[in-house]
Length: 282
Image (cartoon, rainbow, N blue to C red; front, side):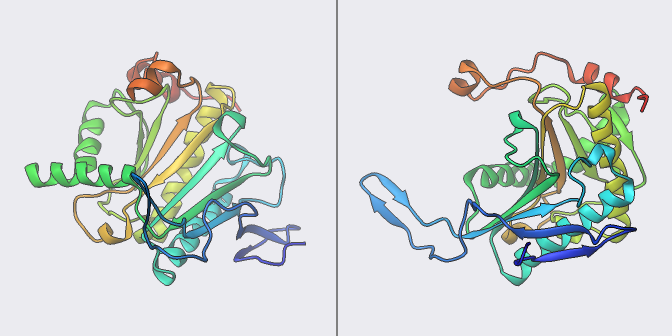
């Protein structure tokens, strides 16, 4: 029996609960520690301070997102939002990453449907670089790069696969792997924490449809999705725009990719979008 439940949402029907958030049994970061830097020869080290939680998405062992109802996905997103907000505001962490690993090649270690959230007391270099690139674009053009991408993709339509009142889903122009998808909100906002209740419903609907398209058209591939959102210090700045990135694991990084940092995508984004736009038979 779970004794350390951080959050539990009410169940429906015969289910005693809908979602739960619990501490990860094998956390990547620990809340106890300090941020002092230490040197070891040419190396700089610090303790990994933060929190690592598991979000259990359903009491049903075989009910993945593709099999859920939209209202169930909305409850999952509500749980994401509440845990994200608690970690970033109440505990004042510098950065948080919310992600879902589906399948062995995506790194999942538990079969039961779940996501994870990790909050840290530092901002990773990878995130810093992404935020710096957005800052550089805004400094040069006075606009948000993701807003410009959304406008261009909706105008072109060749890579757009889904759209509703609040979000658009498209295969990015320079996708790193086949059938990569970005789900982006129309409303400009740097921080996922600012999502409205109406937008949660819109995100649940488009995410559910996107995952179903992967499930039916690509035979339920292994995938990761990651919430891309601002670090705490940048959450109120105008150059950033949060979005959800979905990465199907249809190819594997090999020597060239590892050695060069260049991704080889054997398919064209426009062709992938054409495939994913097709209606599927449930």
